[in-house]
Amino acid sequence: MSGEGYGPLRIAMWSGPRNLSTAMMRAWENRGDCAVSDEPFYAYYLAATGSDHPMAEQIIADGETDWRSVARTMTGPIPGDRPIWYQKHMCHHMLDSIDHDWMSRLVHAFLIRDPDEVVASYLRSRDTVSAEEIGLPQEARLFDEVCDRLGEAPPVIDADEFLHAPEAQLRALCERFGIPFKPGMLEWPVGPRDSDGIWAPHWYESVWNSTGFEPPQQRDIHLEGEGARVAEACRPLYEKLYQHRLRATA
Image (cartoon, rainbow, N blue to C red; front, side, top):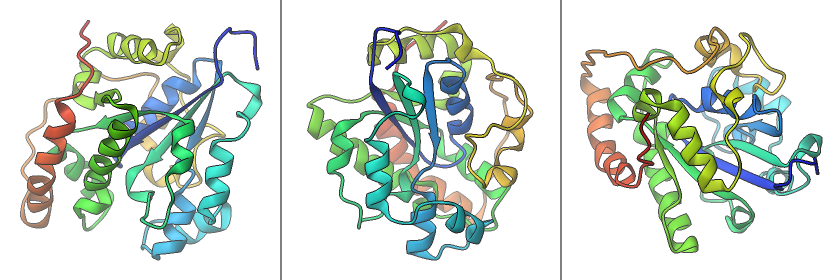
């Protein structure tokens, strides 16, 4: 372990797609004392479900399709002998066949976003959407499971509130994890990273062009049909998690 004086700390950040998850991974990687992993169960999920995702064949060929092997890796030595390991996990990748015992060796946080925003963003890259594809039902179940194990609620980050006060929110999150905040979490060099998943060219264009967290944009969202139904079905789950959000303002 490095000489930072803390760790080893394995952080599982749970979210669905289009939830600020990649930008958050950038922030943690830019600390300098933190390894990151980008959706390590993705290849397993695609191989197990046969879901028609962009670049599915390449992702399966490039990744690990045995969930047990992934779980062993996520609880094993931290890459680069770093004190912190930030793991970006998608809730919908956690199929029922995955045993959750390994999760007790990690600390957990949850990233949420208003379902109207998530669905609208998701449909800009995909033709269809479902509640299970954006992961809120799975995220709510995982949240309940972690609460039961800990006896208290783990930290929840609401993406919109986070973007109004990223430094305050990151400071509060670091405090919950018992580690120091580092200013480098607020900005990063433009471009791709070796740590990005092979799917990054399809999904990460905006993050590749970014150098930090951008202020939230006010958008008029008008969902129709399937998109509107999915957002409405997910709203009670979002509101349940939202009650436990970090309340940190600038």
